[in-house]
Each structure stands twice: as C-alpha cells, then as structure tokens.
Length: 333
Ligand code: NAD
Ligand code: LMR
Picture 1 (cartoon, helix red, strand yellow):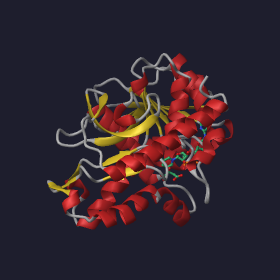
Picture 2 (picture 1 turned 30 degrees about the vertical axis):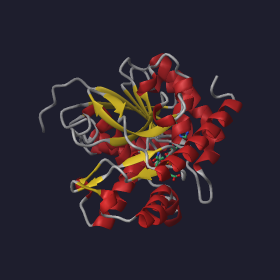
Picture 3 (picture 1 turned 180 degrees about the vertical axis):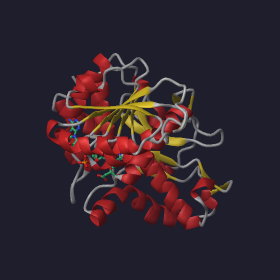
Picture 4 (picture 1 turned 60 degrees about the vertical axis):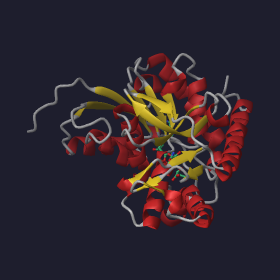
C-alpha cells in the first residue's frame, strides 16, 4: 500500500453529497486534486434525511476507491454536526433549476437552506473556515450565508464563477486554435447568471492581446452569449444541469484560493465587494482575483471597456434586486 502522508487531515464539509455534483466532487477531493497530493482530507457530508440511504452508496464507493489521502468519511443530516471543525465548507446542496427556469427562480427555495447553514458555520466551523457556494443562485446564497454568520470574516465567503471563467477560456481557445493553457487573464464579472460578463479585453493568447486576434462582433454576438447561456444549453442537452464541469470548477476554485494563482495570471471568483469597480459594498460579485497564502485580492486598476461597463452595471443591478428580494423574504436579518 502507498505510504501514509505526514500532514494532519483537513476537514472538508460538502453539502448535497448524494447529488450529481457531489458524485464527481467528492472523488476529486479524495484523490488530492483540490488540496494537493500531500494533504489528507476528512470528508464530512451533509444531506437531507431522505437522501442518506443513497449517500451510503456513495460512501461505499469512496471507500472502494482506496484513496490514500482519505482519512475519514462521515455523513449526517444535521448541519451542526456537519460543520463542526470544518476548514472548508463547499455548499453544493440546493434545488437545481429545470428547463425554462432562471437561477433567480430558486431564491425562495434555497434561501432557508443557506441561512441555516450560515448559522451552523458561525457556531461550529474552525477558525480557518473558507466557504465556497456552488448551489444556485450561488452569489445570493453566499450573501445569505454570510449574513447569517456575522462573526466570520467577510473575505472567507465566496461563490463559484470559475465554471463561467473556464467556459470562457474554452470558447476563446477554440476560436483562436490555442490550447487553454496558453490563455491568461480572462475575466468574468458580476453574477453567476445570464447577465454575467465574460471579458476578453485583458486576456492574452500565447502572450498576444486576445482583442488583436478576435473581432468585436464575435465577442458580442457569440462569445458572451455562448458563455453566459452555457448552463441553460447543458440543461437542454442533458436534461440535467452541468455536474462534472461544475465539480471540476469547484475543485479549481478552492485549489487556486489555497494554493495560489500563477504570477502572470489571475482567475475569477465571486467575493464580497468592498466597492471595487463600482460594485456596491456587500454584494457578492465576480471579480478578477489573484490568490496567495490562502488569501484572494481583487486585481486593481484595470481599465474597464465601455461594453463591459454597461453589462456589469446590468449584472450588478440584478444582484441588488436579488439582495432586495431575499431581504424582503427575511434572510438578511
Ligand atoms: P442535485 O439535485 O443532483 O443534488 C443536490 C443535492 O443537494 C441533493 O442530493 C439534495 O438532496 C441535496 N440537498 C438539498 N437540500 C439540502 C440541504 N438543505 N442540505 C444538504 N443537502 C441538500 O443537484 P446538482 O446538480 O448536484 O446541483 C447542485 C446545485 O449546484 C444546484 O443549485 C445547481 O443549480 C448548482 N450548480 C451551480 C453551478 C455553478 O457554476 N455555480 C454549476 C452547476 C450547478
Ligand atoms: C451552470 O452554470 O451550469 C449551473 O449554474 C447550472 C444552471 O442552472 O445553469
């Protein structure tokens, strides 16, 4: 058998582990793809009571994969147990949208879940806790969880826009005939919704400005709508929302946060605004960020293209409307 690693295990709480994303995500984490090949992990999986039997099957498979880094797996339907000592909270469990729905339609259904989990995180999690919300509407769910956990530093709350970022990389790579690994400085701004703003104006393709390689018509007419509506296209094609790519992006998001971004690149993360780029303070919005030593910082001083500005204003208006809606529902205290 492989030698046991020396570092002490990190506790990772994953919600919705019996779902589609969970079925991919748990295995990627246990394989070491998220925190590295030297870092043992304890998995703590939160599910609703009726999904616990199905979750037992997933747990059997986790054991059967004999991952050397997997120190333990526990399951529970009790949030207080799930977040006890958690170093990472990956909030995936939520009701996904179906055909014809927008992610915002899920606000009421999911608000209560994220408020309760925010409270449990505040009461139970480790001082190192970092929260990543994948469950939709991800940005506003993160806002709700943060509001329910006022003692946890604001910068520990994040929502996933890495999938949008990765989709944008893939589209630009295909258009320019370049491997995704040769593209730097992509940005996705705003909400994880159809109003999101994929932005190539700072991107480099093999070191060259992307805007010298693709025309504005393609950016406006194809690139932005394809990336922004990709979630819906996948629902249409699969009859279910994206799962493997969403799990992969969640792994990428946490890996960048913990292990850092490369010196010549950045990534996109939804974080609590302090007013950067005109995004009102307190909204959870996507920004270009660099990460080092387990901390993110928003890339500052970028010139914002006029089209991008207009689209970002619309996305921020949607975030503000979602915030007002959940405040009305009583989820912001
Ligand atoms: P799914 O329905 O297959 O699984 C969700 C799981 O969450 C279910 O097993 C359900 O029992 C569980 N769950 C529901 N309420 C819970 C609660 N209170 N506590 C713990 N578990 C709970 O859905 P999925 O396809 O895995 O997607 C999960 C979420 O991720 C959805 O909201 C989906 O829209 C979202 N999503 C986000 C992105 C993104 O990029 N941010 C991408 C894809 C999917
Ligand atoms: C996605 O972007 O694939 C997810 O947010 C699922 C969805 O509802 O689109």
